[in-house]
Length: 297
Ligand code: SF4
Image (tube, rainbow, N blue to C red):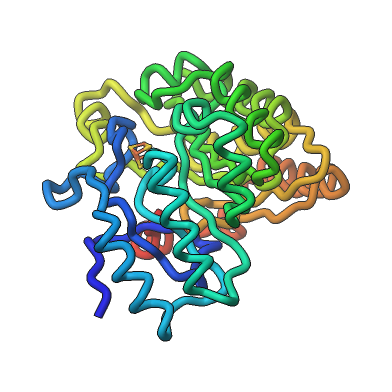
């Protein structure tokens, strides 16, 4: 029986993947809006190679599908030698393996560099999920993201050179009321400059356990209301030009789910968003109780 350190987080699109929890927690663990790995039991650590091998042994006799997601929060932080060993073992034991994915931080990507990432690509690393959150350096500093605009562009170029797909997440509302508009314009610009294959927009939910919760109680952070978050979505979509990518806001945290292929669907979804902002018709939005009860990152 494979033992996971819980709670376990993975992107919604990895629902059918086998989750190989090679690391526990997140080595950064400072983002002020994030409550994912705050428990003592989730303090960052890497499993030993022996443990990882035994998990893969067990999983390869039944659990592993053709997709593997290496968890937790930023598995790319592992030393290159260890990642290569894990991925080689996965390839050796799982004959139907089609793709490997993981979360990655901008700094981990820059530290690895193109050549190391090309090696991981050859071993099956098809895509990484990166939390861009915002393109506004003021916001990025405030939320302690650990990466600025320029670094995020640099990391995205490295990924393209290495042939690894970029699935970027941006966070509506994270600039608060005071930086809402700046956050939205800069985020659209960042998405254009990085040109990811996938963009996922999520809406910030201020949760106990995340430092931003305390900031909010003390009046130092004010979450924009639902229509302001949709306004941010409008500005982001308007300012995002992707060569060939998908833009989704169908994560359960969002008030207005959209699915679009860029560039061809851009004008259609923009019109959809503008209609909602014009009518302010709440009945077309996802209700708060639904977002609150079901949302799990
Ligand atoms: S948002 Fe990601 S990088 Fe930031 S603390 Fe949470 S898991 Fe770590």
